[in-house]
Length: 340
Ligand code: KG4
Image (cartoon, rainbow, N blue to C red):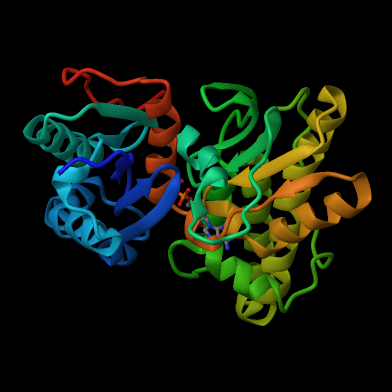
C-alpha cells in the first residue's frame, strides 16, 4: 500500500557489482551488494561472466534490499537505475529488471548516469548520522578504473567535466603496474597495503606535462614498466625485495599528479569545497592528501565512506531521489548506453 513517504529503489549493475538500495525521503534504509569473485582468476572483469552473475544475483539482491529496509515492493514510489556508462551486457540486466518492475508496479522510472551517481554518493545520508554534504558549487575528483576526471558540480543535474584523462585512468595505471609486479587483481588495494610499509621517495617515475586540467597516466605506466624491466635484469628478486618501496613510490606519483591539477582547478575557479569519488578514492595516500590539502589550503574536503567508494546502489537511489523531486522521470523505451 502507498504511504505519503517516498520510497525509491536504486539498482546498479554497470560492471561487476550487483547492487540494490532503498531510500526513504533521502535517507538510506538499505544497500545490498553482491560482488563477483569469479573475475579474480582472469586478472580483470570478463564481461560475459559479469552478465551471467548479474542474472543470478539481481533477484535475491533486490529482495534482500527491500527486506532490510522493511519495505514492500507495492510501497515503492519509483525505480532508479544505472543506464550507463558501463558494460552493455551488465547494464542490460539492471535496466531490464528496472523496466519490468516499474511496469508491473505502474510506477515511474528514473535513469541515472553512473558517474554522476558516484558524485552524488556524497549526499547519501543514513538515519541518525551527522553527515555533512557538500554545497553547490563544488569540485569533485572522480577517479576509478575507467575514469580520472575533475568535475565542476554546479547542481545535482548540472555537472561539467573540466578535466579528464587523455589515455589511461589512474586506477587502470595502478592495476597495470601491479600486474607487471605479479601482484593480484585488482591491484589498487594491494598497492595501497604495500605502500603503507614503503618509502614513497625511493623511486622516481615519469610525470605528464600536459596543459590545463587534463590527466595522462600512460607515460607513468610505461616508465614504471621499463624501470622495472631494467632493475629485474640486474636482480631477479628485485620486485620481491622492493615491492613496498615500489608500491609507495607509485602511489605517491599517482596522488601527486592527481592533486596538482585539482589544486590548479580549485585555485583558478576559486572553489574551496573539494570532493573525491570513485574506486580509487578508497586509497589511503589519496585520502591523506585530501586531508593535508584541507589543512594547507583551507579546503573543505569530502571523502566518501569506504562502502560508497566502489559501485553501489545507494548512490543511484540518491540520484533518483534528487530527480524524483523534480519529476524527472524517463520513458520505458530508453536503452542502456555503454559510453557517454
Ligand atoms: O569505481 P570502481 O570501483 O570501478 C571501476 O572503475 O571499474 O574503481 C575500481 C578501481 C580499480 O582500478 C581499483 O584498483 C581501484 O579502483 N582501487 C584502488 C583502491 N581500491 C580500489 N586504488 C588504489 N587504492 C585503493 N585502496
